[in-house]
Image (cartoon, rainbow, N blue to C red; front, side, top):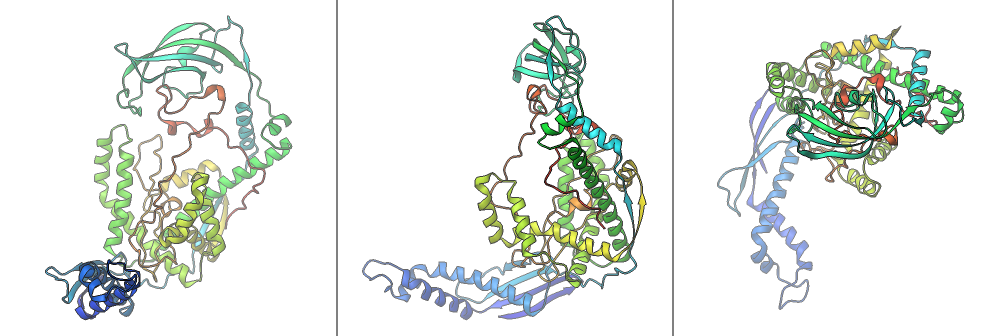
Length: 559
């Protein structure tokens, strides 16, 4: 192979490789020797077909395969001999006019990773905002559990339903012209009045009904309703009241704990306290990590490959476009995004630079993910698939290095961050959860997030950028915080050969499980035309409390 460098400008490199016909033919000969013992042809004993006859019949296909193999080997040799570190998969093109049997001229273009300057990690100073677990927070969670476990008592036939009661109804939904619409009919649906689970006006109009009543409800579907043909449209629901029940007293006692499979109220209280503490620790870490990345970004500035920035930007932009389609006014949201395009490109550049920097820090300081940790990651990831597919998924990850790299990445990044936390001078300050959340929200995830790259193996992965949910006030849509932004970042060990292949299992991911209703008698799903469309709008305080796990020890405050 002859190699000629045709471009060396900044991070851009280009080469012309000439692969001789002799080299290609030698590979054909090797393949012929491998295939000959397996070939069968009329008039010849198995394995005794002459090589020249095999070449005559299969020569063009064998030569094409040999050419492809020779090009791949030549590019790998070029990368190794020149000690190149491609940022993305090199562009490889066979020169026009090539004929089988002649020398092959191949053009190779790439961008290489920059030489990252020695990271300045001494003198890092961070403030750790800690939030003690208040007794009233635990009591609030206990009350949620008690409310979820409350019993419903049958009311008298002449009892008039009020807010807080459970009304069971049959219903038929109709459009303004009186035509029943698809999915708008149901029987024995439990409606907890005041819970806010159904479209506006539905629950309110059931106040005052009695068992056996028939009533017509007049409602208007929300503008953002998932079924576009109904969105913003008036409708009626013909209702038949099957029963009315009143809520029994919600008690925080030993029986509540036992109904959750625990031994005592003390154990339930302790588990809830640990759960809240774990949530606080997560917020503390998110805030510290952002501040850490800010210091690293401010202290390091070096050129990054434009192709990596473009790939990162495309991931961010694609996710933002998806989010915009779910806004009340998608066109306005897109117009606002367009006005901030340059800002998001700067975010992409920062993420790539920070990723390269964290990778350099990790490799320089021996940060690695152990085999045991990797096996645990694979086992955890397999749980998202049905039981019959888990073994297949685990085999896939073991056979596909890039899929393994995708799983390894978040843990590797966290371990680098933990290493930096240990190096930093940290001061503690006690605050409230509201203040800590406000501090995180004020940063808005803007320009944070990382993209960890392997300097030695030249890998690149895409991110699953998830912009944060919008707050009540209008604010700039921003990519997710760093904890979520680097889910698919490349780790320190992924191989170079699949550098731009998207590390996703070939098998289709299982559909998300439907959320189980809080009460069997109030089974209203989001897919029902009656159900409230915007589940994200529910205040956190109204969300069902998470059932504590007795076997899981509370997480200690992270450094």
